[in-house]
Length: 81
Image 1 (cartoon, rainbow, N blue to C red):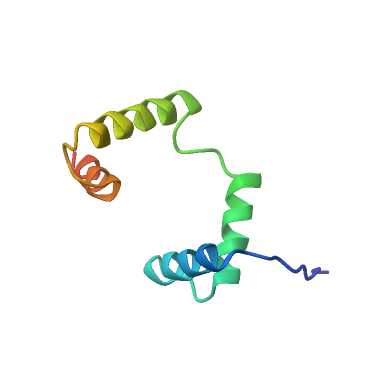
Image 2: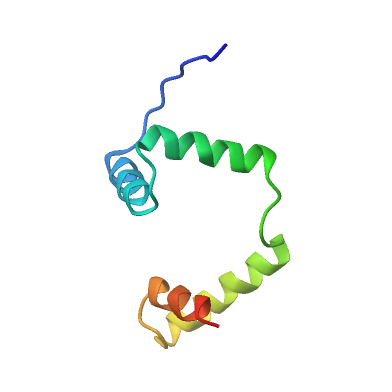
């Protein structure tokens, strides 16, 4: 049996969620949210907390020095390696 819940999001969060959903192949925002909850509850993270902290420090240092412009550009560059 499934239970329906109501969720309130700010307008900006909803806009961002819709955009993300569309770009990543989710049919609806609801499907994106369900998948995100499943990932948080049942899947192992791809990287450790320590690795995530290192990436965060790299992103901050890169942004401060304006090496790649935006965070998105930085991650595009990192994915190519």
